[in-house]
Length: 310
Image (cartoon, rainbow, N blue to C red; front, side):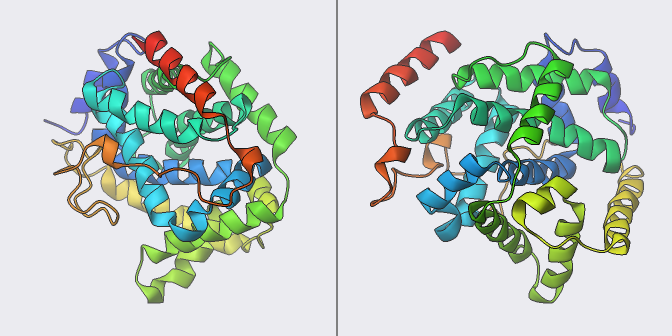
């Protein structure tokens, strides 16, 4: 196996028909670290939408269990990518995702926007910091993969084209991103979580580096203070230097997806765990009922989504 083994395999496949295999190779073998970082920033970006951050504040998940919520989301998405959305573990992961989301009143537009970030944020990240840029095969495969995931989540009106969906997401950001105190609270909780992954002496530098990598409209929506240009340049240079080093490494022989033995919330994952073990419980006591959906409508919609995905 030479450095371009997986790329040749990707280019031999069809980006629509074989999108699951292409996405698994790209995210699990070629760019596992980059996809993990990019999806962290993708989720971070969704907290700039006031309706999303307000719900997270209402549930208290980010205030009381930020690491577990992060691990649940990351592992459920990794299960889908590693095993496929129609595999037994994939279907189980989707049931967990749908159960968690189905408890709350979440607009279709918010769900659609979150879905879009899983496609386009990693593509943008790898364009800037990857050891190589994604091919058109990989970009289109990511689009088709998450479009099918979204359909199985019951998300409506998913654009049928790659460029069309990207334009929709950009318009949504332009129309919805604005500062709120809820955005700021969730932004700080998330930033604290990211810093906690590193030794204490490094955390101030990590905080500045993460902030430096945020887009200007995200800085505004969170109410953060922008970092000086030199800090931004240094953070980006560090990521590019890493990519130059990674380019020299041999190809990975084992997928990193859904294989997190040092996971803080689920030690040894996936050994001894199934997707059903992941995810938040029911809504917290005392939550405003306006955030909740009727249990009967949730059950009906869950059965409908199950039927449509078969």
